[in-house]
Image (cartoon, rainbow, N blue to C red; front, side, top):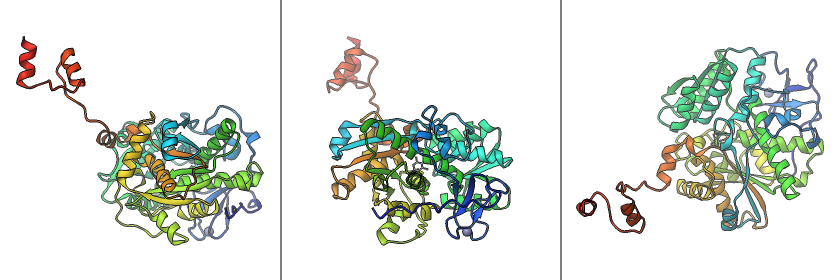
Length: 434
Ligand SMILES: *Cc1c(COP(=O)(O)O)cnc(C)c1O
Ligand SMILES: [Zn+2]
């Protein structure tokens, strides 16, 4: 571990109370709720939410969901369904099979709309209300649009989602549609959709709720807080490593920020910070490339392809926030093939945990890193599974067992189960007649 870059000593801009926005490029500070800001007005750099004080674990209370952690968030409460408090499953067979000391799976598919995006939206839509905007928008590979549609509906606000035509899983479109979002199918890929929605936001036409929005990442920090609290309570220590799928790298940035803030408050010793380990699909791996080549930022991949549509992203907007997180925590990044992703999806399903393809990338990546000897067998690891199986029913059906046709006859069914041929053939029909 090379040590974490701590937030600067808090020096709030004049007139700010205890929350403000800090540009990670030029260091300029901005008042949070005066005007609508997505990037730094001075240099267009990424903004980060800063606080006058960072909490310790003692300051969190209430039920185990996102707003339990309000001491680490810009508000006391939000537009809530409620979200967070997801299971940290034990997976004994997979743990033995992959070969690490302790493997847990944090299943974010159990959030209200079936992905971790809900954690960001409960905070982001709360901020939208504070700013009195009347239209919300996001570009989406699917899950952000499902989450924004639901939280926008909850808040009574108009919602617009921009999706890449033909590349969004069925469950996600169904959610956005029924929750009442206007769905614009753009003739382009996800990165094109994000360009368009940023233009709309810059022209004042909509409030942007992609992970470029720094408040979404505040909500997503609670994934890290929940993992650390739960793991410590159950195992008496913190996990060595957190492995997660990476698309726009918002979650990676959010976990890194969570750790820095806890180190800053003294709640987490620098030596106890889990190693952040990102997994991408081979067909969309600009973060892996940047880590391997030691680059400060990612190169934009224009042609991206993978079964894991939620991480089919060629230009990860949060790379400048996430790359230092992977490096400073001593983590790494790895790419996995679609076949490895599907195998991991089946492995998880075999432990009763149903996830969409992108989610399984974390487990596929861990398996690969252990096999390569880059992750030691003595480690305690938490894999994040980001979205629910039903998000992408087509991928699940393709990866799973084929339905088997049988006659409407118990004896025939028993013969079929015993491996004897029955059914629609002439023999089967004759047998049923006599
Ligand atoms: C959004 C999403 C990701 C990618 O998360 P980033 O924060 O963009 O890296 C991964 N898996 C699923 C299911 C998602 O919805
Ligand atoms: Zn700036």
